Amino acid sequence: MSRLAASLFLGLCLGAPVAHAGGDAAAGAAVFRKCAACHTASEPVNRVGPSLMGVVGRQAASVAGYSYSDAMIAFGAEGHVWDEATLSEYLLSPKAMVGGTKMTFPGLKKPQDIADVIAYLKSPPAAK
Image (cartoon, rainbow, N blue to C red):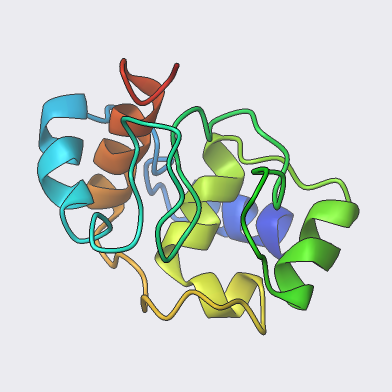
């Protein structure tokens, strides 16, 4: 069983809400401030990290002009897409999901913060 499937199964067994259920885009904009030192979500400009504008539904490691780690390139080559479930797992612990990623952020520990950030990333102008 994949890590993602196991995580979702465990969450369902424990009665935990799926991280993206009930996200609030306005609250997510506030949480995104933790990400904004390295990423932008409102313009297609790469910073230390790639632009996250339009990230939901995008294949991993696919932003033109960004120099990804070998680990993230391999993750993208495996066909991973940044959907809500994948983002939920990644935002919890980036290095646990993609060992060798350049992203040094340890992750968001509150499921509601993850849900809110995903809602923000899906909202205009981040979703353009």
